[in-house]
Length: 237
Image (cartoon, rainbow, N blue to C red):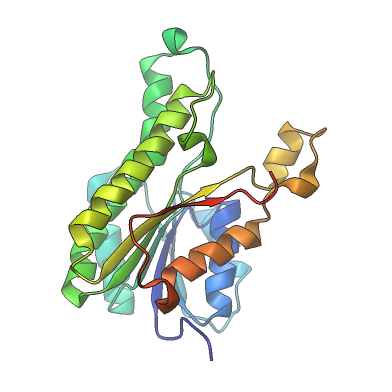
C-alpha cells in the first residue's frame, strides 16, 4: 500500500534538484502534489518527470511576496481541499566576503532566500493545518548551521535561524497534532556541486534520493513522535 495515498504534499523549491527528488519520492508513494517555485517553465519541466496520471499541480509563486504566498496557499486548498505535508525546500547557497566586507544586499539575499521564504510559507500554511488538526512541516537547514564557516556568514546564519524557527514552531504546534522538524544535509550530490568542486570525492556526497527518504520518513505516521528535531543527513560527506 502506498504510504501517502490520499495525502496532499506541498513542496517549495520543487523545480530544484532536491525538490524534484522529493516530488518523485512522494509521487511513488501515491501523494497528491502541489509543486511550488518561482519559474513557471522550470516547474512544468519538473511536473513532466512525474507520472502522467497523478494529481500534481504547479503553482508559480514568488515566495518573498506574502500576498502572493497567501493567494497561492488558498489556490492549493481550493484544488486539493486539504494539506497534510509541507516540505519547505526552497533555498540556496552563496559564498561571500568576510563579515566586515559583507553588504546589506548580500546579507539580505541569503536571509530572504533561506529564511524569509520559509517564514512566509509557514505563516500562510499553518492556519490550514490547524483547521484539520494535523500535519507535518519539514524544513531544510544545513550542516553549516551548526558551525560557522569563514566567508559564509550570511548562509550559516540563515540556516541556523531555520533550526531556531523550527524549534519555535514545534513548541507552538506540538499540542495541535502538527509536527515540525528540519534536516541538515551535508554536501549534496548535484550537478552544480560537481561542477563547482570537480576534484572532490563525489562518491562520499549525499545522494538526493537519500535525503528525500528522510523527508518521507519525517512526513510519515512512523515519525509521529518526532518534533522539534534537527536531523543530520551527512552521509559520508
